[in-house]
Image 1 (tube, rainbow, N blue to C red):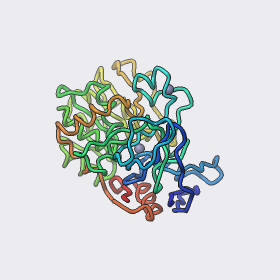
Image 2: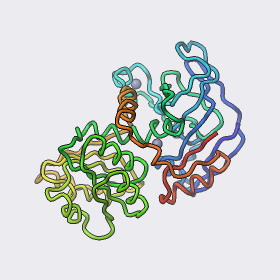
Image 3: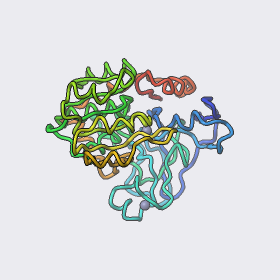
Length: 337
Ligand SMILES: [Zn+2]
Ligand SMILES: [Zn+2]
């Protein structure tokens, strides 16, 4: 089968590898759609001298179950599924409670600690399968697998509502999803990103204002449209300057969720939380138990997820796909089979 592979220093290729077979408790998925995520780019950019990471990238998989391994029940070949890309132990309180992304027992992520979705087939645990209802396209399934859930979960944790001005820092695919969800939850949304095309998309999707953080002090710019500062903020850029700006963007008693992570150390001063009594939380993917709620929310609010999609390419174009995503000017880059 074909599989994408990273060779370090922004070099990617499509190579031929053996098709995997499912072990006990596992299933073989034939891929229908996948995508490049910001978190893939850390590996893509690695120097060749960094510890070798030989796993096939990709953690936003949509496909068809083809064969099931020993002991798998309740899953039939032919089912169309999304793969929840964190493989937990299946037994701890976090896994049993639906917070698989917090499993402390050797949690493995597809595309990072085991082979991922950027290949003709992948093997995963049967318990990682999430049914994709017929009302969703495979492209939407890819977005729901990671970016949409990663945007939805922090907004729910922050309790965002129509009482809030919500700042979204970073308008890549996760940030754009946060703009759409924030609007659907009733918030006034202000989008922040240095790339004009991304700001234009946020405005088109209902942001009341968009700000260029490189154009001057961003906190002062935000107060032109939200005098008391932001009530809630989602930081998706992963940029240290984005982290530092939280302090000037939030109003008194504001609450923020950190979602983005870059290669550089975050630059937020913990003492700055004191005077305005900010609440800052981290947010990591989304609980597998939130899947049905997420899908219902998207449907009931007609959230136009497909607006996030930039380019749709074949797996053979993987080198171009990663280069496009790395340039950070296009929308979400998808693979289709
Ligand atoms: Zn992702
Ligand atoms: Zn666990």
